[in-house]
Image (cartoon, rainbow, N blue to C red; front, side, top):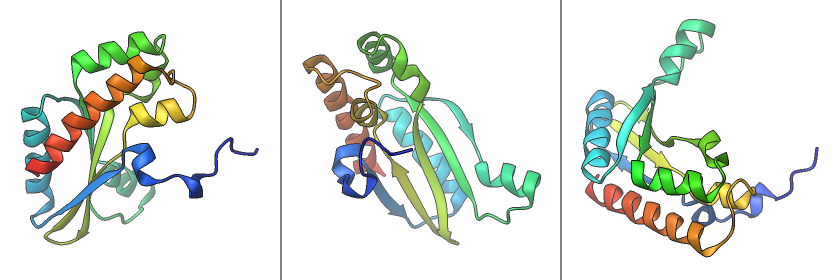
Length: 146
């Protein structure tokens, strides 16, 4: 299978990649990220620890890794309407927290709205551009508070 785009050619800005490092314990970082994203207008309806699951199921010996599924309901509703419901397959917008070393956590996010446009799940039109801009502003505001 040939990919329609070359992943090596994608600029992190094209997918809304945002990251930062927090100097705190893993559990404290998870709470902090959840609180900051909630204050920025996101709900967190889904969260889980892939590392715990994989360590339990396949003895993976992974360092702490946590996914917070963040969602701004008003923007999500607009995105579903703009994409004829297809964008829901990528919901929620995940923010991940992984332990680089004890006391040092990486927080990472990519824009599902931008990715959806790149792969054709969402239209490349003005309405979707407005949704991408709004979610980008919300995420930027959250990362500024981290």
